[in-house]
Length: 450
Ligand SMILES: [Zn+2]
Image 1 (cartoon, rainbow, N blue to C red):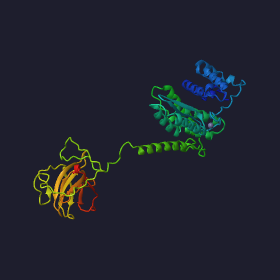
Image 2: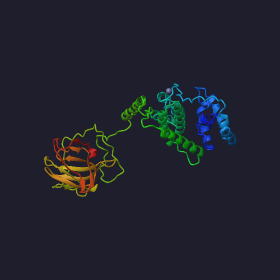
Image 3: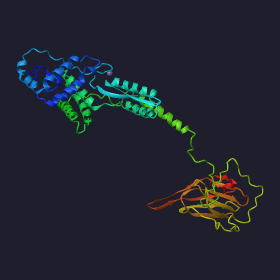
Image 4: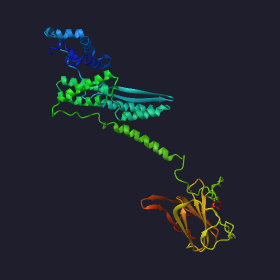
């Protein structure tokens, strides 16, 4: 016991004898938090708490403190019981002393219909017990958290994630705890462990972010930092490095993550099996309008099950659809509207394999309703290139003018893009054949869709 501190008042407050009044107050608050009997259900701290109060009374009053200083020399000769060595804080769950206890908070959520209750589970734990607490909080949440609206699922997901990543560790409480723990290990002669704990403590101090108006908090934090730095300054080069038992690789992490994974997989499976909507366009032809210009009337699509049965004898109409005689050479039907022009893409329709004339329509599939954009006559063994087609989705529909059979191609996409070398666009060739084995898949076409 130092001659400056004969009654051990400064020691109880963990202060040097020239500490300022402000530091005395801060130290008292800090030690009171640690030693208060209500906060220590597992051990009897009443005596230490009383000693703390006595010390504070003597040092917080300026005249009493002056008297203590003046009488120190005289008092120092008085026999005085040594204060007991400080006892390190133990895990609230298993009671073991740990160099790295933490104040940790986990959340469990319980819901029922419209009520959702979030309950924090907090305490000073060793890392082992903390993992068990987290798992228990999560298990409760998995079972009981979801069943309330709207907050049940939201709070549950949040709590589960938080617990999975180790819960929250409030920085101020942890810094205080570690300052005390470092002091205890030092008093027990384990300077090396005290240094390691102080390093941990500094990390928590860095996370304390008081606002400019929280003067008491600022001074407490600065005091904690000063004390931790004092420990670290004494560190020897061969000092121990504590393995951080609080790192993510905790042995229950797989449980948390596994449970999350199972649920995520179940949700994914449910979504992909939901018969709610189509993810691909229907294979059949689209609703079709024979009007090339936008028209409000939409003709219903024919059910694909009804196949067009060609009349036994097809008689070629006397005139083309434009009311004029059939042309002799390949070309657009005069007078028929041409839309979706102005692009660069081209489709060549090769009727060279075919010994009958065909009437061809280029049909745009880019809107809700399929619409013809060009009508072309191609004689037997002829060929025609449709030019200046705007980018988009199209198919080709054609009628064999000898048999009357109507067919359509698969949908195709014409694309157009500009790059450094110019504009890139689609160029296609479709070969029409009487036998359906040309370079495209073709389908029989209902009457109303030509
Ligand atoms: Zn424990």
